[in-house]
Figure 1 (cartoon, rainbow, N blue to C red):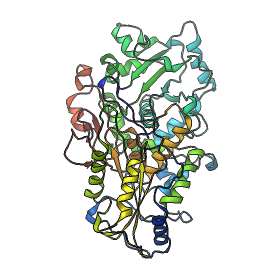
Figure 2 (figure 1 turned 45 degrees about the vertical axis):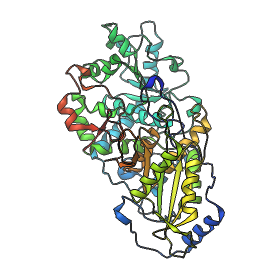
Figure 3 (figure 1 turned 60 degrees about the vertical axis):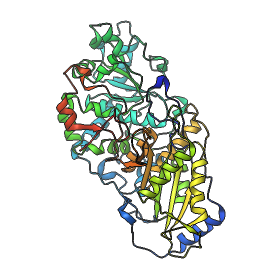
Length: 534
């Protein structure tokens, strides 16, 4: 749902108002005649065994019956706390009904640490006595860490679009968990009431009366930034009441020393850390030796770190979830297989429309995600046992979905399957500062995550979130300079840290070579990025 430029010729991650789509406004792009054929075939068909030509990695259970969901585990094996009123956040316990079962297991240690964190969050949540004592340090004339209480905080500052925001919330939470700090979100109007509270009995929203005003003012030149304090050779960082962590795509070498082990020890003493980023920086936390043992216990399966944490933290509000379920049940529910296609075009890496379309179709047909068409025969009427595939396309404009629809509207498929193509919205431009735009974007991320197979675009944080929520290994549409292949399947649902610090950034005290071999490799969609692997 977005198309944004990359400033200063640097690679900026896609996110926000959507890299691939933006809404749950129910607009059917398939012509009515074909739609009738699809519904007749789906509602009257006899049950068929699941077959996937060529071994494509579908995880489909066919049409879903929501009146019989006994096999779905709403608590995700204990990942989620049962201590919520279900009606306040329907997505929390309903998402398991709509999604395919996760192929990944979480550790018992992760569950115990999450319950411990929830207790800490309740104790230190906004407007508790301990929070008030910590916040008072920020208002006092002394303003130093020695006066702080036992509660310490990471304050998340949003930057860029929905995809960027979600991956950085997850990153900030893991950082807080590793350091026994409490995560609070600075929520602007364009992000209000999009997400449910993830922690029982307490809010994660930063109060409006927070003593530090206008958190959006913090940026690369802020004297309170950790990088600038290091650069100025400040000797009192660990006694400050707060420090700003500047970690967006345009961060500098001094900012990147945040990931060094000595920096982590210093920052652990600071009661308030204000963090801004637009990257999934979790892989670099795995390169800090001090965290190695804890992370190994939390995540024995490193390829599922984001998958577990994003499902734990991110639950769309009832407003967003209502759009998801209405659209899904109207257009996608009865299909035998659902294929998500998330398209992103970067302004500074333009590609002609026809060339991009050719790449998309080559990926879909070449990887047998969709059937080829019979060039000699027009589309024929369906029978009661015709198999139906539904394709959900997300993009800012309708052109690609219309072209894909026409391919399957004009000709029969070589397999006899019927393919329907749907696009919930086409916003034309990214408007991350508009709440309704963000509601649509989050709804479309959720819809993509309900797919049986997913195609995403290189560098797209919008796609990263969808694949993480669904536990999907996406086929990534690569930039033409990266490969002659149309797409390549990712090794896991893990996002790429697109612009990490260099290993030598820490001058030997963190991010060493042996750790890189053990924990991370280069990403499929960005040679300069790093990604967690098993």
